[in-house]
Image (cartoon, rainbow, N blue to C red):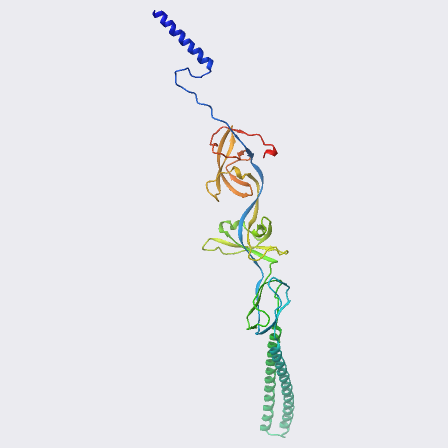
Length: 389
């Protein structure tokens, strides 16, 4: 009986082993152990590290301003009889823009001319008297040698010469005074005609025809948009890279993505104490007049070209905070994802310049999802057809 029971148990075990082999299970039934499934292999898209010449740019922003922005003021007072230009009108240097009633200034000029004529006549009379006194002095000298006159009479003749010389000097001074007065009236008469001091456009008109104005009153404000400047502030640590003559490219909200060009024309010699920044002036040619003084502009100064720079797509970078100069990327190595810390050198559109952390032989993963971890097995996906991208 015992032998029969042992034989039955043996056959039952043999059947169980056979069933286990038939089902392909890696663990005999009843043992309770399981074998972990191998990790899934992620299919990733990659891009090679491009090695190119990279223009190094410094971002700038600020407001455009005209190099010629002047207030046109009257130098004399009076009634404004012409003021024909309106805001937005173009003017050229020397063009007559307004005129003040010249009647009173013409009368003053005529009076000064008459005073000058009187002064010149007085000088001529004084010179005649001087010539007469000198001849009398020569006659008195001859008579004194022959005893024809006394010493007292000789001294009287000498006094007459000195008085005549003084009268000539007085007449000359009066003539010069009259000339100066005439020059003042001539200038005042000329100042009644107000001309444009430079080429430009009328930014503002302050007074209309018929207004009574005092000397120094503003009549027009003139701006020249053909010569503009972009005034911007740069951090002082970037000062070493900025030099006169460097090219700058910028855009304005008015013209969207249209690029305008300028040149660094001035660098302030002093660093601002409150924000440690340096004022830089970019000179801009604007012959077409598309740009206007007061527009906001944002752009970059091209300071140098970095040779053989490592460039990757922007989508490959992971950053912890905005405006950071560091981040990380995943590269493919030995069939696994490897995370690398990198240092940024700059960005342009959808490209990044990487200064440290990768090599030109690397392939960076450009589609980063939550399943991508350090050391995860990956497989490079084949390039997609153009119609699928």
